[in-house]
Image (tube, rainbow, N blue to C red):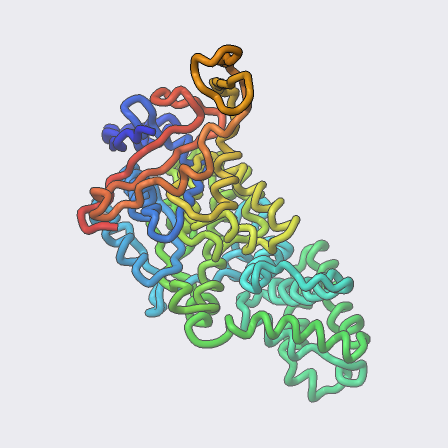
Length: 503
């Protein structure tokens, strides 16, 4: 199998067509290019640890998108990724566009208030805020895959009902929205009919004070109707719940929000806002320098908040007014997957979002999405909407079988032949004895079979870079619906050159 060297696409002269979908980013071969249109249909890169996926194809694609002027969001798992992107931006004269969100908390993003104050049709709706909040919390809580209890659906709905009414109350009261503000409303809600009539409780309860503030002049008929629903919930329904039921609902809420209300995450996401996901559409490269390997759960929450808000902002933006493509870059992608990713990926081409996921193997993705049938179905849906696949060396049989099946089978012709030789007579055999004779037969033929075009074992034999391989990294490139000129197939072998500093 011959691996052509990877060529860099020539720079286009800046013009109105700079970000046309047909603009080339990379040349896979002398006659095959990877365009902006290809990039915004999504890319999946697989390869075992040490296969060169990050320093090979990952580096080549990252540099190509930066040279083309993409903005983007970079999620991080390992501590060295910020430095890596600093080098990428320096190499492409994009250092001034780099924004690092990190432990210094200089760049802050109150994601709930941001969502509540979004302008435009469909923006700022309470249900959108609730969906944002719930999705992030559930995804950070190990993907929200659930425990399988029969009553789990009730508790999930009850928790969302509590969040919905608290969000609506703060909105109607004209208050800023943040996680601590929601928390104060919830823990100060009345727990009995007697308490809600208590003047002492009324004087101390944030929930009651916000109800009074919301009941003001100038409410529209719709807002007045919403206020009645909120008041009925907190003053009638909530106090009448059994103590056990109410405590479970409140405990579910407080346990999930606790991590966001203290320390670094409180500063980053519950105070003011001086950077938003829209920065990417303006050409900024936002790196979330809170790697999971270092910051653990805090890192997961931070990255998922930014990822989901970035996806929402990308879907809302007017690409006719601002056609600049943006990228979502996720190495160790299995750490940041959400069940909503497949739905986003199915429409992100129209939003000009170049999603790029890098992961060791598909088994990681299955596990991250809950495993078993549901997880595999969600993974299959996501994979199907990542149109470019770059498949590096791998020792995972599941991934290699999947990759071979992805590329598919073709009708192949096999040649076969057979020769037999025998002698008639009894022992002892000796030439020239009367009655003895030699006999034999030869046969040959051809047969047809449907066989993998690329055998699973071939993925274990690809070059993995480093000095022993001349710093060359091999991969099998696949794009659905495309026949590459260099190979006349839907796949082709490619070779990436690592930077001189090595793998």
